[in-house]
Image (cartoon, one colour):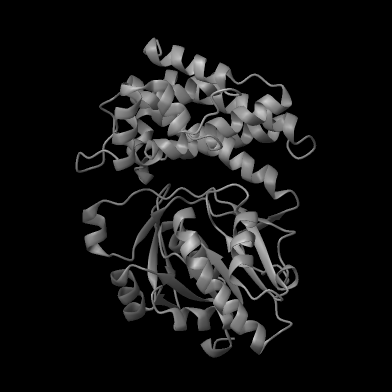
Amino acid sequence: MSDSSVKKSIVIFGAGKIGRSFIGQLFGCNGYRVIFIDVNQTIIDELNAKGKYRVVIKGGPETEIIVPDVQAISSFDVKKVSSAVASADILAVSVGKAALEKVIPVIASGLADRYKISPDKPLDIIIAENMRDAGDFIKTKLKENLPEKYPLENLVGLVETSIGKMVPIMTSADLEKDPLMVFAEPYNTLIVDGKGFKAPIPDVKGLAPKENIKAWVDRKAFIHNLGHATAAYYGFFRFPGAVYMYEILGDETVSRFTREVMQQAADVLLAAYPGEFTTESLNDHIDDLLSRFRNKALKDTIFRVGSDLPRKLGPDDRFMGAVRLAEKTGNPYGKILEALSYGFFFRAKDEEGRYFPADRIFLESLETNFESTLTGVLKFNPVSDLSVINELKRLYFSGNK
């Protein structure tokens, strides 16, 4: 197996932080050749020139992982990308929902070519995206781009994941040292849908197949993502001059409120997925997350964790998704709603003193017309969400005091 010509290959759409620090690292360090597809020509050129990159683990003693046998292809080279898909042993996508729609046609082209060469050889796609029902979304888009008689159900495994790894924004000074280097926390478990694979599940250390992936995706969204954003929003509200997550979580009031919100969400998950989780396992998960959120070496910023308000406060994301699940299960959600409301006061800026572009527009809109921003921008339903809108209105105009 030392001959790289007989190595298995993984084609990863997206050479960003998760693509490199998590998916590429897991497979690359388990004997796979890693082929990235990306639009960033600087990253592509560097990966092809060096054939490897560094992942710096922040937390405890700082360590480095070298990911070997790496190459990259430009997303614009459709012929090469399609060929890589046709010959890959497994695929992964980590590009974000907006870009996902753009890469699916070329994935479909590669699948069609693969079908001509190896009509019985399935291909699994690991969906490393921070979105619910990602498999259904990709399936619909693939159907639109594949030949009518292509046997999608038999030949393509759509493997949803729960991405729990935290990867902070790197400073421009860090990137100048090495544009390929990426920082990450020690956590290295990739939860995957065990029922999503069409080929055998890869023997890769760090993969954790689950039977009910929806429960685990919701655990990520409604405990991890919810708790992280809660700490950022409430922490900024109390300490607007703070920069890092570890600073605000060093405050007992912020830490306690964040835990209370996460525990209210945990009660919702216990009711929604009986038998999948236990109170003890979710409490342990909350303890672990709060410890990871306080990782000083990671230097995760409040700006990174809280920015992109229109998405994070949206109708089915971490806050309102948990509220909707609570409504279904009959669980209280007052703490979750209160945590969401602190997002309306979030004014964190990046290292160059700039707002996240969409946040500035959103916050100005809130100040101009609160209710129309909730219904027009955040897409709350003016009828079925009326009680939620009224409570958020009360919290906003009372300054959440």
